[in-house]
Length: 143
Picture (cartoon, rainbow, N blue to C red):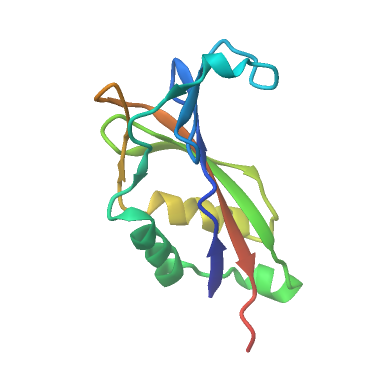
């Protein structure tokens, strides 16, 4: 089945907030909507899947099981999954923050749970815990 993944992830480094696509971070107590740019700091390395994003996308393509209830309902859309990348690269606290139902939410969580580990983000040479939000798009494959 087809899953169109977009790796427009954002991450929250505990103690700082990291905008993963930009490699920038804000102090955790800053109001993100009104924080001055002078408060931005750069994260040395962003969290990423082991083997890179291509390996993660391949895992999703090869393992996605489009739910039968979603197929019957012709359900499609994007499920946003949030999870924590620990300093050792393991994933915890996997949850759906915006779903589409019909079994797609559970399938998105399963795909993240069964994915290979991640390489943690690094700040000043040290691995840091990050929170990632990842959109996974579900669309029925044309028969």
